[in-house]
Image (cartoon, rainbow, N blue to C red; front, side, top):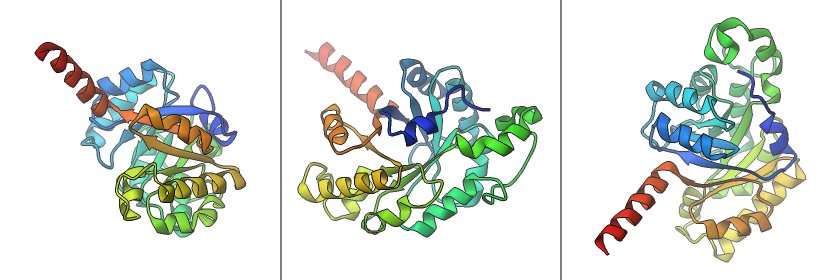
Length: 254
């Protein structure tokens, strides 16, 4: 299922492309986010409750919108990639990548032989159940997006080596994991964390990749822009529902 536009080309051109996280396992909120106008939505199968039984429905929901669906898998394991790609994901976010070897393994799992090791099947949803296999086999690597999460001090130290890996498209900071692993929990505006953000962004620029991050506060978006981040997510469906319901209750209790 080739997308109508090439988001990967925009990402690598370091255009400003925005998304949000879908972590409730719901096709309804996935569709709402897509219809809202985000460039991409991240269907979260690392921390969200969704699984293979919900993913197909979420992808169906997003396919009726202009948003590109990217799926975060739970771990950097080869079988997880082909399961989400075959069912129609247009990109994969890979958590806890801490070395160039980790990044190379992720890229290999995204690509068919001879470019990688992804298992080949001809009748799944991504290839139009057989109708588009040849085109997908030859060209999917040109538009599938690999989003590599930077969540450890080791990853920050090895950021140039990770960024240099062919097929790594986005260096995506997971702020909560990274700050906790750095021993500075949630100190996202402090000097030490800012230095790490800057190091990731500079490496992305040197190697022709995009820098990305998730933030939970709109106030942090201009700061990421200033640091050179272009692939940015704000909030999640769960956070939006909670904030909305809390505001409703506050109004009713006033």
